[in-house]
Length: 158
Image 1 (cartoon, rainbow, N blue to C red):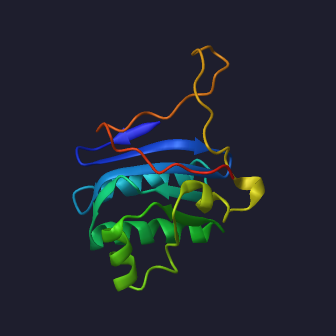
Image 2: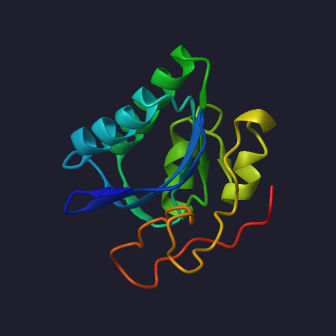
């Protein structure tokens, strides 16, 4: 599942009953906050108490974007869940550090390392299995990013 606005894309990479790995790419600011909150809120409403956000392709995040991340954290805390970020770039890491948000929004280098912080029973399969012949028994694959060349860091198995 991939949803996007003109400046932000959220793609589900993997999920289980209680958790989801979502790739967030593009720009997270005032113009995208309603879309971001609605999209991640729908994931939480679907039962995902644990969210790992792969932000390696997030090229911009300002204070409004940070407030969106904190709002999702607040929502998940109310459901005894948690949010983890993976692959944060220099700008986002500096924003988290300067605002004292590093403990509220933990960052791990890779999705695989972030998933290790979740209870084992609630982790989705990672990495997602490659698509074989497209038959009806094959699991759906994540939608590609809209911009070629914006992949994520290689992750080790959990």
